[in-house]
Amino acid sequence: MIKIAPSILSADFAVLGEQVRAVEQAGAEFLHIDVMDGHFVPNITIGSLVVKALRPLSGLVFDVHLMIDNPDRYINDFAAAGADIITVHVEACPHLHRTMQMIKQAGKMAGVAFNPATPVNNLDYVLPLIDLVLVMTVNPGFGGQKFIPQMLPKIQQISHYLKENKPGTWLEVDGGVNTDTASDVARAGAGVLVAGSAVFGAVDPAAAVRALREAARG
Ligand code: DX5
Ligand code: ZN
Image (tube, rainbow, N blue to C red; front, side, top):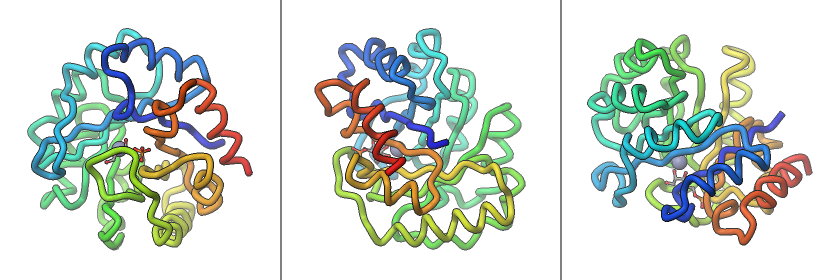
């Protein structure tokens, strides 16, 4: 079954708690939390304090996407704040194996993210430590960008690889996912769909979560 992960990047931060409750009641499984540092990506968003503030309000799986340089410095902060999954970018991790070990030692699920132009050729060596692979289908930094269709074969390739080598690993797709693109993404093998603007840019975010799930079935 497809899991829906609304990204709070596009939420109304003035009423963030209410927006999180709305998508949870609509049946979303994950809450995708985009952390940006103004270095690895051009934008600056939120830190572990926001994760900590939301934690008592929600039973969703907190899916923290770190788009930051040197994520090792912040893994324990996000773990303590209540993250369930911590995902780092391969491009930001010269010692990826050590970084994944740190996430696991903090008792959290570990994810690894790939930018659109990054080839996926070093999963073998970290596979035992991986719970989730995140395929970026836009260049990270902003919500509301257009899905890059050339990423569909990449999703397929990773989906086959994971099924053969570590079934049960989540394959998450992030960027430009909406009711037009969701079925292609799901058919390519994604199990977790991140959606920011398609959910929180909608008049009714709860209805948007249900529409996405329906579209993914298509
Ligand atoms: C982009 C972020 C995404 C973003 C997706 O850098 O990683 O999670 O919120 O936004 P949409 O769904 O609007 O493309
Ligand atoms: Zn993200």
